[in-house]
Length: 88
Image 1 (cartoon, rainbow, N blue to C red):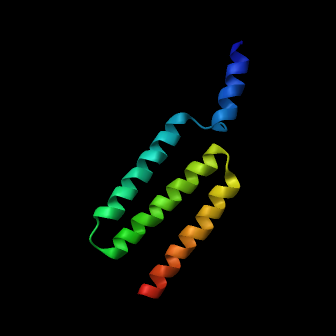
Image 2: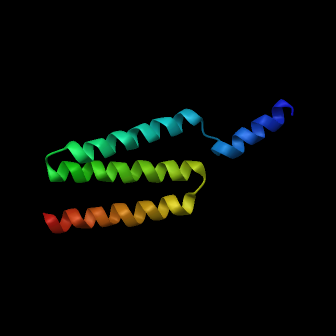
């Protein structure tokens, strides 16, 4: 294998993004998940839940699963926003 084939393989695996971006997004998803559990204010917890769903959908979009990521974004973040509207 020459370097061009390795570059094409890397490009296919990451869709042109660096792997560090995926690590940062996964770390933010883990932190948002932890803050959802430990926050005492329900509104703040819901905002961290929105951050969790947004980071997971960004992760899926970067991996190349665009339809699943966008549907995850629309369905879950839309449902959480409606829950906030009815709770307030």
